[in-house]
Length: 290
Image 1 (tube, rainbow, N blue to C red):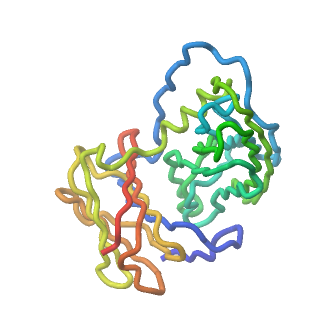
Image 2: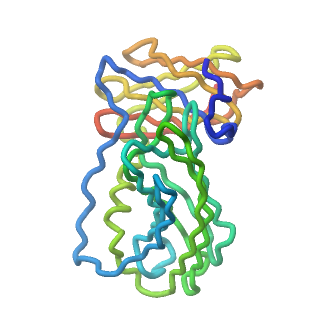
């Protein structure tokens, strides 16, 4: 079992924890190709983006898919551009790394801000980690408290990026969206491209999943229904629980995965977020541990 203390940031995992069943014999890759965004009826001419914050090997900025507040619901994105060979991390980084963190507490007229997570790639050198190379936009669904008032966004964002060394970084952004008709921005199509990589509900695949504890140190996951080979599986577990890499025990109906875990407590009744990747598509389901 991997040691969570191997994290090169010397920072304990505080979010959900993950397992993976990687089916190399089936040639299943973890990268999800996004469909092309729907073309706008009219080419946008106005940008809605902050300045870049440069961290030498990576840079980051805040972008909006619209130029004004509209009905109060909008799509933002945190855009990260990486130098060749560098990677940044998904919501669960894996055996090492630092997941992105969003702090909107300095904002005004903000009701909610929900980050979305495009399906990640799996990296195996030197440890098993999950994230993105070259370029990614992390979409954020935002809702204003009052659509007739300015939405003053203030984001403190932290993330990590790695090559042979790992670098933690912080950036701060401010953006104000005024009341008015919500016209598409220059950045809208690219934000929507990454939104299209966010997994669908598992039911869209014709599948369902269940999870149960075989004992305090081993979890069984069953995948029922759906066509084709069993997909790659990533699991976000309860906070503070470490999952070893999953093993595929049976291909069939249902397909069966097992994984060793280190919880330090009984996690029966707690929730898992299951992410499935196969054939250029992605699905998710939230299940209770039985």
